[in-house]
Structure formats: structure tokens, C-alpha cells
Length: 99
Image (tube, helix red, strand yellow):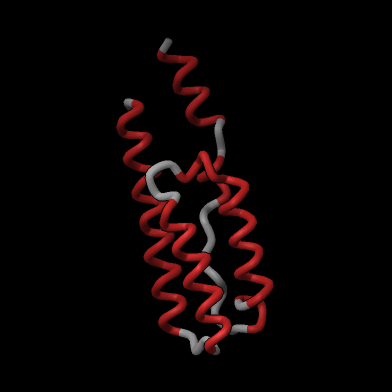
């Protein structure tokens, strides 16, 4: 596996996550203030798609904010990035074996 493949896979996972978030927001009925909050947070999350791992703490903070403000009261669970997305071990192990 090359580093280009790793980056491409991470990009795909993050893109899927953003698509899941959009679908989630469309499928539930958000009040106007919740929709405004969602749109602001979504725009921020979308701005990180070129390098989401660099913005790990912000992404996690936004996920908690969405869950607290919107997601916890809904029947539908808020989409989240897989925990393994931010796992640095995979890349380090791969790099260690390669070089």
C-alpha cells in the first residue's frame, strides 16, 4: 500500500462521512436554530476535507457539539467518523516497514 493509497482512502472515508451527515440532516426535522447551527458546523467540517487528520480536535469537538445540541434528542443517531480514522498507528507501522 502506498502513501497515495492511504491518503485516497482517508479522503473517501471523510467524504462519505460528510455525505452521511448531510443525509442525516435532511432526514430529520431540524428547527430553524438547529439547522443554522448544523449548517455552520457542516461548512467548517467540509473545509477540512483536504486534510481532515490535521483538524482532529476540531472535528471531534464539532461532533460533540452536534450530538449535544441536536443529535441526543433524535431517534436517528448522528453519523460520526470511525474511531480508526484518526488512528496514527496504521501509517506509522506502514512507514516503519517501508523505510
